[in-house]
Structure formats: structure tokens, C-alpha cells
Length: 180
Image (cartoon, rainbow, N blue to C red; front, side):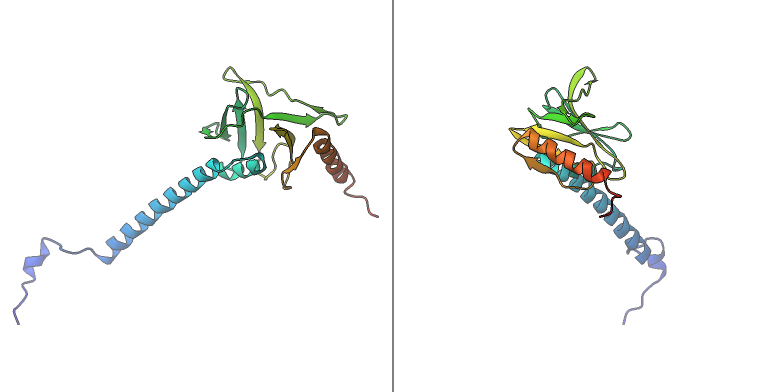
């Protein structure tokens, strides 16, 4: 058997140590995790095809709070996070109309103002505790009631039916301490 000269291998390492391999694997897995979460968040933003999925946009925000802002008759929409950073949405909600109830229970169109000199047609807030803006949205003849808290978005054929549902829910919340 030939003898191995140890001095020959001292100056030039030919293999990785176990520690070096573990560090490389750790760095690659961290990079993969960041890429997967970023892609999945963007995919969630792309998959919002109707109003009933609107509340799921909250998970796309880094802190869970921010707002959906739509400009120019809802042709251009974006998410704005708590740090005022814009995240554009690929879809548009053209022709969307928002309603809120006033103190008397009558439906009215809210005034959202302007954003960078563009008229705002929708401003929908996402709060950190999971609540959102409560409103009724109309799109293509269907009215969607969006509850402020954890209820599901419900669709109605008329504004009066959506308004009635809102008022019934408000009455239930007002009488929550009544015992029968």
C-alpha cells in the first residue's frame, strides 16, 4: 500500500467541512423561504377576482393594517401599508360604487376625497385587529355587504336588502346584553 504524504494536503484543502456545508444549506433555505413567501403574497393579490374575496387582501399587508385605495372610477387600485408604501393591484374594479349608512339608516355614497390629485372612488381600511371598513359595495348590479369584523361578505340583489341586513346586524350588536 502506498504511503500518503500529509504535508502534501496541508496548504490546499480539497473538501468542505461539515460546518461549511451546514452554513450553505442554512443560507439557501432562508433564501428559499423569503422567495416563497413573497411569491405567495403576490399570488394572493392577483387572485382577487370578486368583491367577496376583498377581505383576504389583509394578509398581503406586512403588518396586517393598511388600506385599499382605488382611483379614477376604480380603474387603478393599490394597497397602501402602514408605512404608506404602495403595492399595486393588477385587477381593476371599474364601475364599483360604495355606500355607507348614516345615523338615520339611509344609504349614502361617502366622499373619499382625492389622492395625488385623482378622485378616490374607494378607500377600504384594514386594521391590525382584523376589522375592516364596513360598507356596501355595488358592482354590476350586485350589492355586497362587507361587515366590519369577522363575518363573511354577503351578496344581495338590491341595495334595500343589503341595507336591511346591515340594520339587522347593528340591532343585534346593540342588544347583545339582553337576556331572554
